[in-house]
Image 1 (cartoon, rainbow, N blue to C red):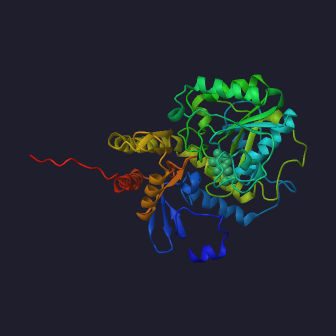
Image 2 (image 1 turned 90 degrees about the horizontal axis):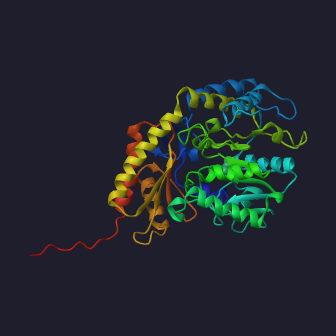
Image 3 (image 1 turned 90 degrees about the vertical axis):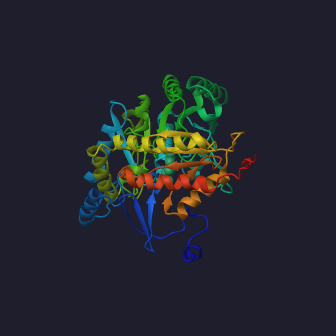
Length: 428
Ligand SMILES: *Cc1c(COP(=O)(O)O)cnc(C)c1O
């Protein structure tokens, strides 16, 4: 860690101060030989497990054929096969096209380029608590200032932020929240200026906020009726994580464009924009791409990864994992009023930590519990605009036993930081 501090820019932070040398089966091994239970999957990336055998095999084969050609110079089959696969498995049976990129930020940024090209309009609507990445455009779309934006302006213009649906804190139905958000969009931007609405179907970094039922369909209907491209950012929610192949399947949403990344390629850097053919085909040839975008090794990994989600029915497994997490934390919530909310779907679950009484966020206890978990060999991530959410993103291949072991440590973390209660002495 001293070498890290001396060699790596301070802005590149870390959650757990360990050096990983191996991983697999829901376990990370550090340089001291410690085993850590992985409840984060490198932020929802290794959904099929670390160094999954199918990925190792596909990557090994591809690396021996060729490592790079640049698809925009001399195309190759793997890229096309990934595009075909995404066109067939993403929501909606309309004709689709896909473009591949390296990171989720790049995918979101290109989705905006495509929507602007297609509509000839510039404005983009995003939501409170949104996270869309760290490039200038996507950082501008991200809500939280510290640490993502602080000191990094000026930001991209024509980004408008409106309220989202946050049932735990706003108490509104999906319809009510949508009516309010759409009123803001109409009054502050206007459909005639608006290229796209971009939203995460369950917000990730913002706190695993699941909008009330009806909120997303209302936004989609309004966008469709008003010539606005409806973009779902499924970079974190995609690929079986939420108990469906995509979170949009839950309310049978059919976005005009869907962005994917993270869990797509078993840990290799790949991301995608998939959408309606007429929208995706709008930018001129040469307008989209990148030196490494759709790298052949990453494409080989993606094909093996997506096949693994399907073959092993990992969406069903995600629901089972979610049920175990619910069981553990609903039970804790019964006796511990610092657990304000247990929410999320499938293996994308979170606990919002609050100050009893006021219900205000408690980022200090949240950080203490996460640190306790790390000190006791469990990698668990926090999130949320107020830093008050503990999130669970275990690999979908984790065993129930390992999962329960890991969750027990988190529960112990709450108990270890129990408020000092003054129990009445029972004197006669
Ligand atoms: C992580 C994330 C991104 C950014 O992806 P990177 O690969 O880190 O650039 C974008 N959108 C959502 C919803 C994410 O969770």
